[in-house]
Image (cartoon, rainbow, N blue to C red; front, top):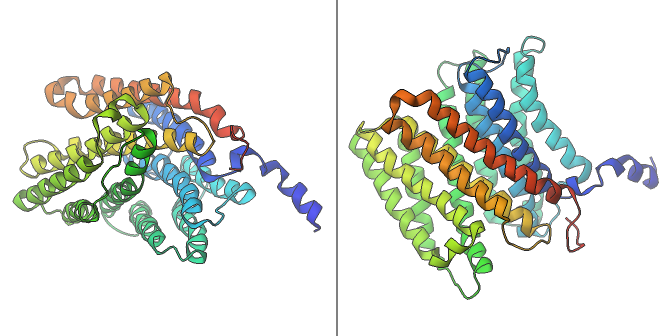
Length: 397
């Protein structure tokens, strides 16, 4: 095949949508935040009945973590590793292939009656190892040793995903819970690692004349104490030991964020959404300490992690990164400021209102779902043209 034939073969993928990882995967994650939640709602209230590879509530948990959230992670790392290493990451046809693997992972579970369960599980499982492998080359070429942390996190997450699939396929007993716990914990650890890199940077860029303090000791203590809490939870250690560890994690992370914080962030939506998202993670450590003494249910901390820590921060990160890497002004539109408020209200409703009004639990879930959908509908409306058109400054990417 000649050079001209190769170019023609790749031409359908030489479009802005496949120019860099954040474009493809942020678009897919935004879409999945809407579609997956709508399908879950229909399954939850019984208006939709479908065969599914996953059982019980596993599908909802799996898709929000290993569907939506992993797509955000993929988009961020495929973009950031390029910046950190100066090496190319997946673009064009190769990026489209990785995206297609992710899409098949979302669709195939609904064909469990037609396809072998082993095949369905394998397709979903393969995404994280393939993503890690695609990032390994630029990291190795550039000898960017700090990048191996993310490779390790992705592979451990894939191990957690494997534990989920092993139970579903009947290869193990009661490993799915541990798998989900590993995945959630590794996502939070990854957020804490990334936060140390981008929060001070974004604050400096967003507020002229500010110089957030980077304290390596607080970084290590914040991430290390969080990892200890997660390790205790995976080993199902509770009581005083877990409460103490969670309290220490909360204090360490408060000290860390305090070094970056300036009051002026409250005038910049692209900043306050990230800081509030981090605040949710700190709140979760406090809730975990309370749940260790059975003062509150552990599920409250779980949803504060997933909707607050993960949901709020990922929405904020997608909004900020997409503007920065398409050559646009780093200012959130009014619609996105409303979206940031809506997703935080959704988390408040989902986490705290059931404590006050337990009899209204079903209605509370419905309201929280509507608020989530409204937030991501605004994201889709604002960012669809940004992610699918060329950079505003004419540069590549």
